[in-house]
Image (tube, rainbow, N blue to C red):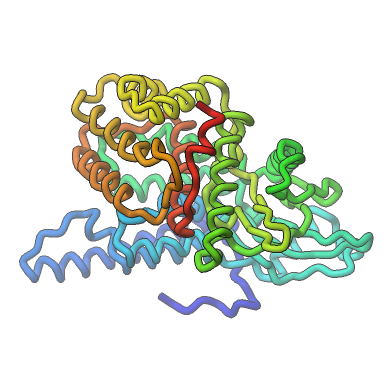
Length: 440
């Protein structure tokens, strides 16, 4: 893989449809060439590799992630969605490579940045600031964040969207969807069209910073009396559909707390779970992106800082109520009620064989069993994770019964998994019974 450009220069975001299509074409050609070479090598050794085995080599993963990271926008976002930490389900080397898409976006060069801000704020925008750092403090899939100080003394974090993101969403999602289909990872019997359509809709929403600004303000109101959380204040005078201005809030990355005192790690995890439960059962509004970068922790104030509301999703009682019934059934050890709630949520359909439904319910019971006991739940305990993993792999091996749950369920489960992953990363211990008791 060629070296990255000098950090102070950045790399321009390809904005035209043809330019982005050419990048996808180059990526496909590079991957295909690697597959041919690797396939020939294995055939010479008397092996008969499958298509997906040839595609998902570390070398091809590097090619794919490098190009998606350069494209940014919906292409990179789709890569992030597909590569959310697989934990024990992916080889460690492949997981590490895919993790780049969650942590290593390239930023725009200064000239492209100025072009965007001239279009949004007008050419005299610099007169509004005492300081505007052109070097971003963060860069992600859809935009990058800069720190600035206005002439009236406001210390701000300003998120600026990459040019051409909204215009490229539909074609990018289609191209990534084609790549997924060609990989052979998804059975031909699975209709991915609804999932890709929802990805398009979600990405269009995330690319609308005016919508995110409204969600930021809404969460600020919902958590106004919750002293353990901090939501940056919105600055509407500098916010547009492509630029989002908010308070700059100090804090450290939550994953950096892995070596912090046990009490700190436990507190952060307790706050994350408590917020998740309030989002699901009280607010019926959830920030569904579990990326750790969306959370910070301020050691001075001991508050959990919430940063990104682009993936915020609202849902009604028809979604929230079955989850509450499932929680109660799990805590009571009521297998029959748990299966009924899981059917209503959409974890499986009525056509799924009884043996497979029973296996899914058993995995749920395995996860809930330690939560029924008094005392701390240790997220560092790998025994339960391994049991669930083994059960999930056994089910996944039967591709004929694969089932895509409803979209709301997919997004909620993605957030649940992300929070559990955070607990595992922090090796936190939490009194789950006390947190869950109000929702019985």
